[in-house]
Length: 226
Image 1 (cartoon, rainbow, N blue to C red):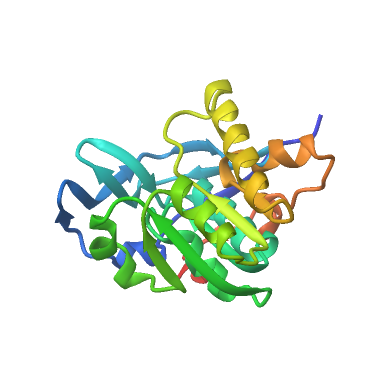
Image 2 (image 1 turned 90 degrees about the horizontal axis):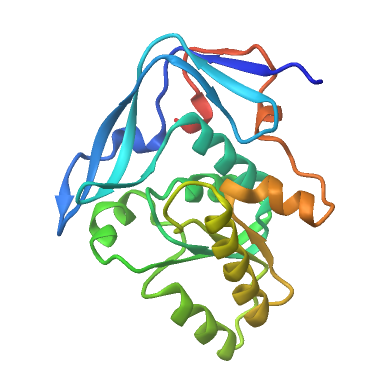
């Protein structure tokens, strides 16, 4: 059995760390502390270790936490944004806008369109991102409209399913993927939480997030995340 790979992260700061902590119509950008300990990455045998607590940026709707910028999320998004996305990209769900920072650095990405249902995120998040175009609307309404208008889309990335990564969420994701294929059959469908499982299902080789940085690296600051 392959030995676990560990990344020791002593300090953590991302682009979202500098977002103002503010609220708009029930949505808020807040700070959440992640305690010391060992945590799993998205890779099959990759972990990271926090010798000290780190401060995360979190997006909440009331008391419901939607997204944060913890290391597991950021490495998975780096894999998707830097190495997997290409051409004209549709992003389903703005969240904290983290995927957009990696899409900016990917020379294979030519255009980005984001579909977000929650109007308050236009004020809370979009001014810090402004990558491509933002459409306020329901993903399941907007995507068919883009197809009817003859848009050529190469990549569809979604991240708006809420809940634990379990069989129910996997079934919802499969239905979502089928919906995208019906309207854009040639597009690559990406979703960071289940990407490795989707790749395995398609007998494809995924780029492991843990391969982005050599094993055993100790971070003073993860500078690529600014």
